[in-house]
Length: 68
Image 1 (cartoon, rainbow, N blue to C red):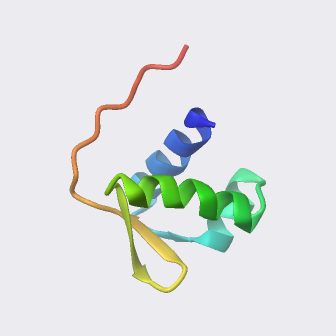
Image 2 (tube, rainbow, N blue to C red):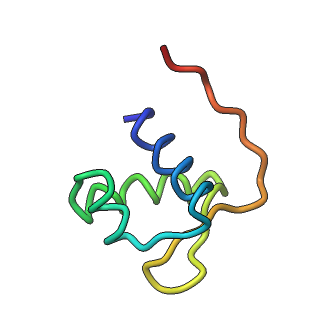
C-alpha cells in the first residue's frame, strides 16, 4: 500500500495535477481506492484539491523511503 501511495504522490508531483478518474485509469484502481490513498496524502499535508476531484501536490517537503 505504501508503494502505491508513493507512486500516486510521485505521479501528481510530476504531472502537476490529476483528477481522481485520471489516477484511477493510470493505476488501474477503483475511484474509491484512489480516494482512500489521496485521503492519506491529504491528511499528511502532501496533496490538496485545487478543484473538486482534481488533486495537486503541496509545497510540503517529503523524504521518500527507498524501495528495493
